[in-house]
Length: 277
Image 1 (cartoon, rainbow, N blue to C red):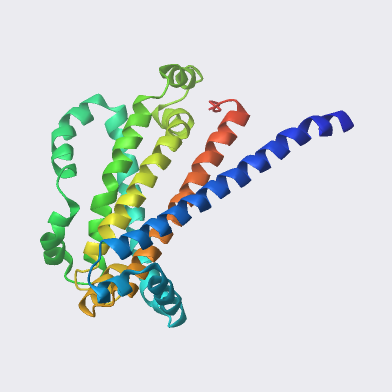
Image 2 (spheres, rainbow, N blue to C red; image 1 turned 180 degrees about the horizontal axis):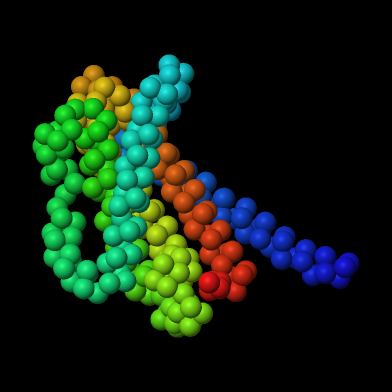
């Protein structure tokens, strides 16, 4: 037992050291970004009012005020809710479509042209249609987010299904499994990493589309607030809102990345998937 502890200690210490190094490099990257921001503000912005408004110091002050006066609750939470709803419906639609596209060749052939045509159309081009269908408010925003997020999920899920080892499917069928068992025991467990990859890409797309989408007749949200700060010429607050959007996107993506790593680790520890029927 003592020998085992002695053998494990260097590994644990090495991982801790690597984690500290990674955090140190991340902090260094943020510091470099702030310094570049300050240099750009001092050298490229000639208007004194703009320079003072966009400066990191003024942005930090406005960021504190953003939280102090309750703007985070009033604007960030509605945006998070809309992103969550958009992703929920994108997953609800995209995963079944991805499985069908990846598993059934005929279905892929029938739908490929239409899907590619719609996928290549900017989600923002659907704005007038969203207003016609849903009016103004949360519904058209969630619709646009769903349209933007569904295709990365469909594509990555389909890719995962096509990459499933045919031997796994044969094993399930040899054990008496039906199509539902093949789906449940072989395909779904194998494509979860691809699904999570698609979900991460969809999440990033949602945050990109969110800002213009929230300019669509809503009275709260980070996108709406950016438009409001622009109209008030409050550039420090505008930069503060941009930082909040980036931070929320970073945190939400990090959560999905952790889930992806955890699933990969559990799968490797188990030595693969279980094909019992």
